[in-house]
Length: 181
Image (cartoon, rainbow, N blue to C red; front, side):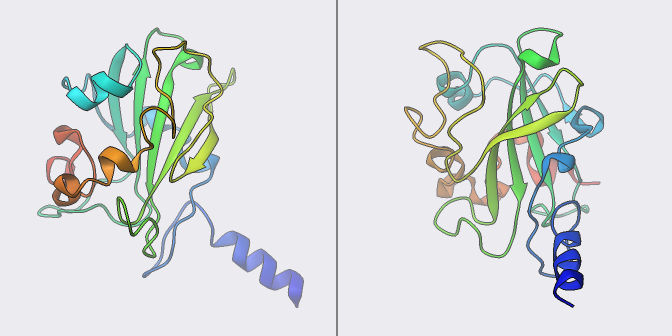
């Protein structure tokens, strides 16, 4: 009986969300992000210019909300890729997953943050997650983004009340109202 309960619990994590369920993003939930709804290049953003590495910024959204929506549904994943070259293994990937369940109530409510990399096989994988991801597996130099460090963590910007109306997404082309179907 215990084994059956464990299998059922594991099946409910990642990949989907239910009525009021909490979504726990796994590597597989970022797979194929390049084929999602996208905006490239993202327009200049002073915050990104301050904390992100250089390169073309592109945004990807796993699921578009319905028309008129002001927030993303639980289970939505947003990826920002900074593409310094055609080689995806050199990209810096920042993710947000709409976890729900009141996660991150003191910041960008319901959102969890991720640092990702693309492996030699072309598949993305999570290197760090949480409210202040701290290791993205790269060595970008002294002027580079410092997750959870010099930049103060993702909530410093995304958790600002000024972005509550855009579901804590900073770039206007990726706001729920801009991506709605």
